[in-house]
Length: 412
Ligand code: GLV
Ligand code: MN
Ligand code: MN
Image (cartoon, rainbow, N blue to C red; front, side, top):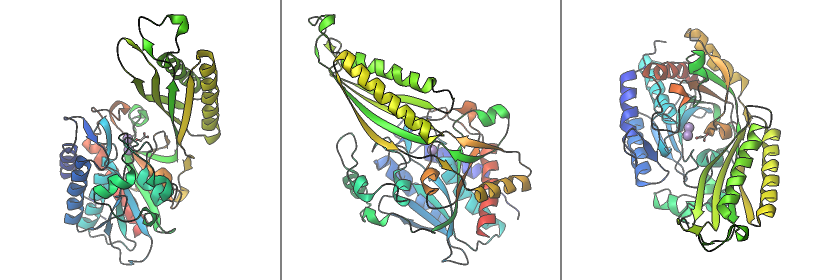
Protein backbone atom coordinates (compact mmCIF):
# COMPACT_ATOMS: atom_id res chain seq x y z
CA UNK A 1 0.00 0.00 0.00
CA UNK A 2 1.38 3.37 -0.99
CA UNK A 3 0.21 5.85 1.63
CA UNK A 4 0.62 9.48 0.76
CA UNK A 5 -0.55 11.70 3.62
CA UNK A 6 -1.44 15.22 2.46
CA UNK A 7 0.40 17.00 5.24
CA UNK A 8 -0.05 20.51 3.86
CA UNK A 9 -3.81 20.22 3.51
CA UNK A 10 -4.06 18.70 7.00
CA UNK A 11 -2.05 21.55 8.54
CA UNK A 12 -4.21 24.10 6.68
CA UNK A 13 -7.35 22.39 7.98
CA UNK A 14 -6.05 22.43 11.57
CA UNK A 15 -5.35 26.16 11.19
CA UNK A 16 -8.74 26.83 9.62
CA UNK A 17 -10.61 25.00 12.38
CA UNK A 18 -8.60 26.90 15.02
CA UNK A 19 -10.06 30.15 13.67
CA UNK A 20 -13.57 28.98 14.59
CA UNK A 21 -13.07 30.05 18.17
CA UNK A 22 -14.46 32.32 20.86
CA UNK A 23 -10.94 33.42 21.86
CA UNK A 24 -8.54 35.43 19.70
CA UNK A 25 -5.80 33.39 17.95
CA UNK A 26 -3.64 31.60 18.88
CA UNK A 27 -6.01 30.67 21.71
CA UNK A 28 -8.97 28.43 20.98
CA UNK A 29 -12.18 28.35 23.00
CA UNK A 30 -14.96 26.14 21.66
CA UNK A 31 -17.52 25.13 24.23
CA UNK A 32 -20.08 22.49 23.38
CA UNK A 33 -23.30 23.64 21.69
CA UNK A 34 -22.30 27.30 21.49
CA UNK A 35 -22.78 28.93 18.06
CA UNK A 36 -19.02 28.53 17.58
CA UNK A 37 -19.13 24.80 18.28
CA UNK A 38 -22.07 24.42 15.88
CA UNK A 39 -20.17 26.33 13.19
CA UNK A 40 -17.12 24.09 13.68
CA UNK A 41 -19.32 20.98 13.43
CA UNK A 42 -20.85 22.21 10.16
CA UNK A 43 -17.37 22.97 8.78
CA UNK A 44 -16.18 19.50 9.71
CA UNK A 45 -19.25 17.70 8.35
CA UNK A 46 -18.76 19.47 5.01
CA UNK A 47 -15.19 18.13 4.88
CA UNK A 48 -16.31 14.60 5.72
CA UNK A 49 -18.95 14.75 3.00
CA UNK A 50 -16.42 16.09 0.49
CA UNK A 51 -14.35 13.00 1.33
CA UNK A 52 -17.32 10.84 0.35
CA UNK A 53 -18.19 9.73 3.90
CA UNK A 54 -21.78 9.14 4.98
CA UNK A 55 -22.49 11.37 7.97
CA UNK A 56 -25.03 10.97 10.77
CA UNK A 57 -25.39 12.64 14.15
CA UNK A 58 -26.99 11.10 17.22
CA UNK A 59 -29.28 12.89 19.72
CA UNK A 60 -26.37 14.17 21.83
CA UNK A 61 -24.50 15.40 18.74
CA UNK A 62 -21.85 12.69 18.36
CA UNK A 63 -20.88 12.77 14.66
CA UNK A 64 -20.32 9.50 12.76
CA UNK A 65 -18.71 9.73 9.30
CA UNK A 66 -18.56 6.34 7.65
CA UNK A 67 -16.60 4.83 4.79
CA UNK A 68 -18.78 1.84 4.11
CA UNK A 69 -16.89 -1.43 3.78
CA UNK A 70 -17.57 -4.24 1.33
CA UNK A 71 -19.20 -6.11 4.22
CA UNK A 72 -21.53 -3.29 5.23
CA UNK A 73 -23.09 -5.12 8.18
CA UNK A 74 -19.82 -6.29 9.77
CA UNK A 75 -18.70 -4.37 12.92
CA UNK A 76 -16.93 -1.14 12.02
CA UNK A 77 -13.40 -0.03 12.81
CA UNK A 78 -13.61 3.35 14.55
CA UNK A 79 -11.24 6.26 14.94
CA UNK A 80 -11.70 9.84 16.12
CA UNK A 81 -11.59 12.23 19.04
CA UNK A 82 -13.19 15.61 19.88
CA UNK A 83 -13.22 19.19 18.60
CA UNK A 84 -14.54 21.00 21.67
CA UNK A 85 -11.88 23.03 23.48
CA UNK A 86 -11.66 24.38 27.02
CA UNK A 87 -11.39 28.16 27.52
CA UNK A 88 -8.05 29.48 26.29
CA UNK A 89 -6.91 26.16 24.84
CA UNK A 90 -4.71 25.31 21.86
CA UNK A 91 -5.31 23.99 18.35
CA UNK A 92 -4.34 20.34 18.60
CA UNK A 93 -6.06 18.68 21.59
CA UNK A 94 -8.68 16.35 20.05
CA UNK A 95 -8.43 18.01 16.64
CA UNK A 96 -5.36 15.96 15.65
CA UNK A 97 -7.37 12.78 16.18
CA UNK A 98 -10.36 14.10 14.22
CA UNK A 99 -8.72 15.79 11.23
CA UNK A 100 -5.85 13.28 11.35
CA UNK A 101 -8.43 10.47 11.31
CA UNK A 102 -10.14 12.08 8.32
CA UNK A 103 -6.83 12.39 6.49
CA UNK A 104 -5.99 8.75 7.34
CA UNK A 105 -9.26 7.72 5.65
CA UNK A 106 -8.66 9.99 2.65
CA UNK A 107 -5.11 8.73 2.19
CA UNK A 108 -6.30 5.11 2.35
CA UNK A 109 -8.87 5.93 -0.34
CA UNK A 110 -6.21 7.56 -2.53
CA UNK A 111 -3.96 4.52 -2.15
CA UNK A 112 -6.63 2.29 -3.70
CA UNK A 113 -7.32 0.39 -0.46
CA UNK A 114 -10.94 -0.75 -0.03
CA UNK A 115 -12.04 -1.86 3.46
CA UNK A 116 -14.04 -4.98 4.21
CA UNK A 117 -15.21 -3.58 7.56
CA UNK A 118 -16.53 -0.02 7.43
CA UNK A 119 -14.13 2.58 8.79
CA UNK A 120 -15.89 5.24 10.84
CA UNK A 121 -14.66 8.62 12.02
CA UNK A 122 -16.33 9.45 15.35
CA UNK A 123 -16.34 13.00 16.70
CA UNK A 124 -17.38 12.89 20.33
CA UNK A 125 -19.58 15.54 21.91
CA UNK A 126 -18.13 17.42 24.87
CA UNK A 127 -15.01 15.51 25.76
CA UNK A 128 -14.23 18.57 27.86
CA UNK A 129 -16.17 19.09 31.08
CA UNK A 130 -16.39 22.88 30.74
CA UNK A 131 -20.11 23.30 30.19
CA UNK A 132 -21.82 20.41 31.97
CA UNK A 133 -19.25 19.58 34.66
CA UNK A 134 -18.32 16.10 33.45
CA UNK A 135 -16.02 15.20 30.59
CA UNK A 136 -16.62 12.62 27.85
CA UNK A 137 -20.35 13.24 27.73
CA UNK A 138 -20.77 11.71 24.28
CA UNK A 139 -18.70 8.59 24.94
CA UNK A 140 -20.26 8.04 28.37
CA UNK A 141 -23.68 7.89 26.71
CA UNK A 142 -22.45 5.81 23.76
CA UNK A 143 -20.97 3.22 26.11
CA UNK A 144 -23.89 3.17 28.56
CA UNK A 145 -21.61 4.57 31.31
CA UNK A 146 -23.99 7.49 31.94
CA UNK A 147 -27.70 6.82 32.01
CA UNK A 148 -29.96 9.03 29.88
CA UNK A 149 -31.86 10.03 33.04
CA UNK A 150 -28.64 11.19 34.75
CA UNK A 151 -27.63 13.04 31.57
CA UNK A 152 -30.99 14.81 31.27
CA UNK A 153 -30.52 16.60 34.60
CA UNK A 154 -27.01 17.89 33.89
CA UNK A 155 -27.06 21.67 33.70
CA UNK A 156 -24.63 24.44 32.80
CA UNK A 157 -23.68 27.31 35.10
CA UNK A 158 -26.66 29.35 33.92
CA UNK A 159 -29.00 26.53 34.91
CA UNK A 160 -29.77 25.45 31.32
CA UNK A 161 -30.22 21.67 31.18
CA UNK A 162 -28.48 19.43 28.66
CA UNK A 163 -31.95 18.56 27.34
CA UNK A 164 -32.77 22.19 26.69
CA UNK A 165 -29.36 23.11 25.28
CA UNK A 166 -28.97 20.16 22.90
CA UNK A 167 -32.52 20.52 21.55
CA UNK A 168 -31.95 24.23 20.94
CA UNK A 169 -28.76 23.27 19.08
CA UNK A 170 -30.85 21.04 16.80
CA UNK A 171 -30.29 17.60 18.38
CA UNK A 172 -33.85 16.56 19.06
CA UNK A 173 -34.01 12.76 19.32
CA UNK A 174 -34.20 10.88 22.64
CA UNK A 175 -31.01 10.33 24.66
CA UNK A 176 -32.08 6.67 25.13
CA UNK A 177 -31.14 6.20 21.47
CA UNK A 178 -27.48 7.17 21.93
CA UNK A 179 -26.05 3.97 23.47
CA UNK A 180 -24.35 1.79 20.85
CA UNK A 181 -25.24 -1.88 20.53
CA UNK A 182 -22.51 -4.24 21.80
CA UNK A 183 -20.34 -5.35 18.90
CA UNK A 184 -20.90 -2.11 16.96
CA UNK A 185 -17.12 -1.57 16.80
CA UNK A 186 -14.64 -4.32 16.00
CA UNK A 187 -11.88 -1.98 17.18
CA UNK A 188 -11.36 1.68 18.04
CA UNK A 189 -8.10 3.66 17.72
CA UNK A 190 -7.77 7.26 18.93
CA UNK A 191 -4.81 9.42 17.92
CA UNK A 192 -4.01 12.34 20.25
CA UNK A 193 -1.20 14.66 21.26
CA UNK A 194 0.56 13.32 24.35
CA UNK A 195 -0.23 16.36 26.56
CA UNK A 196 2.93 15.54 28.52
CA UNK A 197 6.69 15.76 27.84
CA UNK A 198 7.86 12.14 27.69
CA UNK A 199 7.98 11.55 23.94
CA UNK A 200 9.81 14.82 23.36
CA UNK A 201 12.26 14.18 26.22
CA UNK A 202 12.95 10.65 25.08
CA UNK A 203 13.16 11.79 21.43
CA UNK A 204 10.69 9.12 20.34
CA UNK A 205 8.06 10.16 17.77
CA UNK A 206 5.24 7.81 18.78
CA UNK A 207 3.64 6.43 21.93
CA UNK A 208 1.24 3.53 22.10
CA UNK A 209 -1.05 3.82 25.10
CA UNK A 210 -1.48 0.73 27.23
CA UNK A 211 -3.46 2.26 30.14
CA UNK A 212 -5.61 5.35 30.65
CA UNK A 213 -5.65 6.98 34.11
CA UNK A 214 -8.92 7.35 35.97
CA UNK A 215 -10.38 10.77 36.72
CA UNK A 216 -12.62 11.84 39.58
CA UNK A 217 -14.10 15.30 40.06
CA UNK A 218 -15.62 17.03 43.03
CA UNK A 219 -17.51 20.25 43.44
CA UNK A 220 -16.95 21.66 46.92
CA UNK A 221 -18.99 24.40 48.53
CA UNK A 222 -17.68 26.25 51.60
CA UNK A 223 -20.19 28.34 53.61
CA UNK A 224 -18.85 30.69 56.24
CA UNK A 225 -20.06 34.08 57.41
CA UNK A 226 -19.66 37.32 55.49
CA UNK A 227 -19.38 40.76 56.97
CA UNK A 228 -17.60 44.08 57.00
CA UNK A 229 -13.83 43.83 56.34
CA UNK A 230 -13.19 46.51 58.97
CA UNK A 231 -15.91 45.81 61.49
CA UNK A 232 -15.59 42.08 62.14
CA UNK A 233 -12.54 41.36 64.30
CA UNK A 234 -10.30 38.38 63.55
CA UNK A 235 -11.39 36.15 66.46
CA UNK A 236 -15.03 36.46 65.32
CA UNK A 237 -14.48 35.49 61.69
CA UNK A 238 -15.68 32.42 59.77
CA UNK A 239 -14.02 33.33 56.50
CA UNK A 240 -15.01 30.87 53.74
CA UNK A 241 -12.01 31.71 51.56
CA UNK A 242 -9.48 31.10 54.36
CA UNK A 243 -11.08 27.69 54.95
CA UNK A 244 -11.02 26.98 51.20
CA UNK A 245 -7.35 28.00 51.01
CA UNK A 246 -6.52 25.55 53.77
CA UNK A 247 -8.45 22.83 51.98
CA UNK A 248 -6.70 23.53 48.66
CA UNK A 249 -3.30 23.10 50.30
CA UNK A 250 -4.49 19.94 52.05
CA UNK A 251 -5.57 18.51 48.68
CA UNK A 252 -2.18 19.33 47.18
CA UNK A 253 -0.49 17.67 50.14
CA UNK A 254 -2.60 14.50 49.88
CA UNK A 255 -1.59 14.06 46.22
CA UNK A 256 2.06 14.92 46.87
CA UNK A 257 2.53 12.56 49.79
CA UNK A 258 0.80 9.42 48.59
CA UNK A 259 4.10 7.93 47.50
CA UNK A 260 3.85 7.91 43.70
CA UNK A 261 4.03 10.42 40.87
CA UNK A 262 1.00 8.74 39.31
CA UNK A 263 -1.39 10.63 41.60
CA UNK A 264 -2.31 14.20 40.64
CA UNK A 265 -4.89 16.59 42.07
CA UNK A 266 -5.86 20.05 40.82
CA UNK A 267 -8.19 22.74 42.11
CA UNK A 268 -8.97 24.54 38.84
CA UNK A 269 -11.90 26.73 39.84
CA UNK A 270 -12.29 28.92 42.94
CA UNK A 271 -15.31 31.22 42.93
CA UNK A 272 -15.53 33.67 45.83
CA UNK A 273 -18.76 35.39 47.00
CA UNK A 274 -19.53 38.20 47.21
CA UNK A 275 -16.13 39.08 45.71
CA UNK A 276 -15.72 42.60 47.06
CA UNK A 277 -12.51 44.08 48.39
CA UNK A 278 -14.04 45.13 51.68
CA UNK A 279 -16.29 42.15 52.33
CA UNK A 280 -15.37 38.93 54.14
CA UNK A 281 -15.93 35.97 51.78
CA UNK A 282 -19.08 34.15 52.86
CA UNK A 283 -19.13 31.42 50.25
CA UNK A 284 -16.57 29.67 48.01
CA UNK A 285 -17.06 27.09 45.28
CA UNK A 286 -14.13 24.87 44.30
CA UNK A 287 -13.73 22.18 41.70
CA UNK A 288 -11.24 19.38 42.28
CA UNK A 289 -9.85 17.06 39.60
CA UNK A 290 -8.01 13.94 40.76
CA UNK A 291 -6.33 11.37 38.49
CA UNK A 292 -4.54 8.11 39.06
CA UNK A 293 -3.65 4.93 37.24
CA UNK A 294 -4.80 2.94 40.29
CA UNK A 295 -8.45 3.01 41.24
CA UNK A 296 -7.72 2.00 44.86
CA UNK A 297 -5.17 4.78 45.32
CA UNK A 298 -7.43 7.36 43.64
CA UNK A 299 -10.27 6.37 45.94
CA UNK A 300 -7.95 6.58 48.97
CA UNK A 301 -7.15 10.17 47.91
CA UNK A 302 -10.89 10.91 47.82
CA UNK A 303 -11.23 9.57 51.37
CA UNK A 304 -8.25 11.66 52.58
CA UNK A 305 -9.77 14.78 51.03
CA UNK A 306 -13.02 14.04 52.83
CA UNK A 307 -11.17 13.72 56.17
CA UNK A 308 -9.33 17.02 55.55
CA UNK A 309 -12.62 18.71 54.66
CA UNK A 310 -14.27 17.55 57.90
CA UNK A 311 -11.30 18.60 60.05
CA UNK A 312 -11.08 22.07 58.46
CA UNK A 313 -14.85 22.60 58.72
CA UNK A 314 -14.77 21.76 62.44
CA UNK A 315 -11.70 23.87 63.16
CA UNK A 316 -12.96 26.95 61.29
CA UNK A 317 -16.67 26.62 62.11
CA UNK A 318 -17.74 26.64 58.49
CA UNK A 319 -19.76 24.10 56.54
CA UNK A 320 -18.06 22.31 53.66
CA UNK A 321 -20.27 20.26 51.33
CA UNK A 322 -18.88 17.94 48.72
CA UNK A 323 -20.58 16.75 45.54
CA UNK A 324 -18.90 13.90 43.66
CA UNK A 325 -19.45 14.56 39.94
CA UNK A 326 -17.69 11.45 38.61
CA UNK A 327 -15.24 8.80 39.78
CA UNK A 328 -14.32 6.61 36.83
CA UNK A 329 -12.27 3.45 36.65
CA UNK A 330 -8.96 3.41 34.75
CA UNK A 331 -8.74 1.17 31.72
CA UNK A 332 -6.26 -1.24 30.19
CA UNK A 333 -6.05 -0.94 26.40
CA UNK A 334 -6.75 -4.07 24.33
CA UNK A 335 -3.61 -6.18 23.65
CA UNK A 336 -4.70 -6.88 20.06
CA UNK A 337 -5.05 -3.18 19.21
CA UNK A 338 -1.74 -2.37 20.93
CA UNK A 339 -0.22 -5.10 18.77
CA UNK A 340 -1.86 -3.76 15.60
CA UNK A 341 -0.37 -0.31 16.31
CA UNK A 342 3.06 -1.79 17.16
CA UNK A 343 3.03 -3.85 13.95
CA UNK A 344 2.27 -0.71 11.90
CA UNK A 345 5.15 1.18 13.58
CA UNK A 346 7.52 -1.73 12.88
CA UNK A 347 6.33 -2.01 9.27
CA UNK A 348 6.95 1.72 8.75
CA UNK A 349 10.27 1.53 10.67
CA UNK A 350 9.11 4.08 13.22
CA UNK A 351 10.34 3.89 16.81
CA UNK A 352 7.71 3.96 19.58
CA UNK A 353 7.34 3.47 23.31
CA UNK A 354 4.50 1.97 25.31
CA UNK A 355 3.07 4.51 27.72
CA UNK A 356 0.29 5.50 30.11
CA UNK A 357 -2.21 8.24 29.26
CA UNK A 358 -2.44 10.54 32.24
CA UNK A 359 -5.10 12.64 30.54
CA UNK A 360 -8.50 11.04 30.08
CA UNK A 361 -10.00 10.50 26.66
CA UNK A 362 -13.22 9.23 25.13
CA UNK A 363 -11.33 5.98 24.55
CA UNK A 364 -11.60 5.37 28.31
CA UNK A 365 -15.35 4.89 27.88
CA UNK A 366 -15.31 3.27 24.43
CA UNK A 367 -12.99 0.62 25.94
CA UNK A 368 -16.04 -0.60 27.89
CA UNK A 369 -17.77 -1.64 24.65
CA UNK A 370 -14.94 -2.32 22.18
CA UNK A 371 -11.25 -3.20 22.01
CA UNK A 372 -9.41 0.14 22.16
CA UNK A 373 -5.90 1.58 22.08
CA UNK A 374 -4.46 5.05 21.51
CA UNK A 375 -1.60 6.50 19.51
CA UNK A 376 0.23 9.51 20.97
CA UNK A 377 2.35 12.02 19.07
CA UNK A 378 4.67 14.52 20.79
CA UNK A 379 3.67 18.06 21.62
CA UNK A 380 6.10 20.88 22.26
CA UNK A 381 7.32 20.95 25.89
CA UNK A 382 4.39 18.70 26.73
CA UNK A 383 2.21 21.83 26.72
CA UNK A 384 -1.54 21.36 26.36
CA UNK A 385 -4.69 23.18 27.44
CA UNK A 386 -2.90 26.45 26.65
CA UNK A 387 -2.70 28.59 23.51
CA UNK A 388 0.94 27.71 22.74
CA UNK A 389 0.13 23.99 22.48
CA UNK A 390 2.01 22.81 19.37
CA UNK A 391 2.49 19.60 17.42
CA UNK A 392 4.93 19.63 14.48
CA UNK A 393 3.50 18.88 11.01
CA UNK A 394 5.94 15.99 10.51
CA UNK A 395 4.89 14.41 13.82
CA UNK A 396 1.21 14.75 12.92
CA UNK A 397 1.79 13.28 9.43
CA UNK A 398 3.77 10.39 10.92
CA UNK A 399 0.93 9.68 13.33
CA UNK A 400 -1.59 9.76 10.47
CA UNK A 401 0.49 7.26 8.48
CA UNK A 402 0.61 4.83 11.42
CA UNK A 403 -3.09 5.36 12.09
CA UNK A 404 -3.97 4.68 8.43
CA UNK A 405 -1.83 1.52 8.34
CA UNK A 406 -3.48 0.30 11.53
CA UNK A 407 -7.02 1.05 10.34
CA UNK A 408 -6.26 -0.77 7.08
CA UNK A 409 -4.93 -3.80 8.97
CA UNK A 410 -7.99 -3.92 11.24
CA UNK A 411 -10.56 -3.26 8.50
CA UNK A 412 -8.91 -5.22 5.65
C1 GLV B 1 -9.00 15.97 28.98
O1 GLV B 1 -9.09 17.05 28.45
C2 GLV B 1 -8.47 15.85 30.29
O2 GLV B 1 -8.72 16.77 31.10
O3 GLV B 1 -7.76 14.87 30.56
MN1 MN C 1 -8.47 18.54 26.62
MN1 MN D 1 -8.36 15.72 24.24
